[in-house]
Length: 186
Image (cartoon, rainbow, N blue to C red; front, side, top):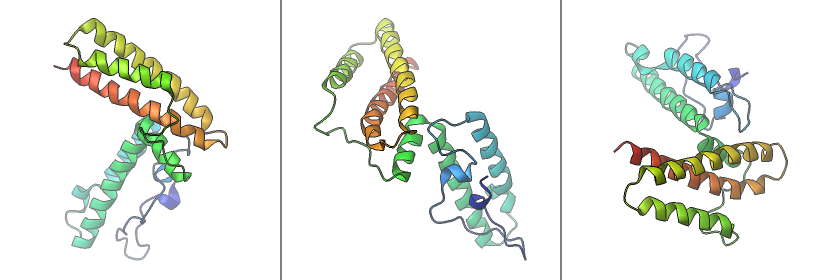
């Protein structure tokens, strides 16, 4: 349960207290500390916390409580956005476990994957072609799906350092996915 990470009210006066300095976002949102999260459960918790702590509910409270409410609301938004998206959730898990994600300049990068990224980048640089975009979108979705399963299995073994490469790949597929989505909307 996330009770110990939940916002606290003074038991005597019922005044809202400030958020903890570095709360565990998984505990705050009552999620298992895992790469996979139940998105519907996460959304229900998000809405429940926002209903209880949104600054609009504290408009007639003392300024200090209004400020704490703003801090809680901001933290809840951050927790929701971090845990909702696989890339940010995975990076947060790495951070919690003291593992830094690989940087794109790491010399042991997979040359086959780098070639794939270069090809996608070159195709995206070409004038708009719906067939090319659809092809890239298929590659990206397949890569994200495959990485999601792989990354999940890696979080259940002690070799968290292997996660660095996986998240480098996840980053690039996510990046191109966003690019393709934006390109489709023009």
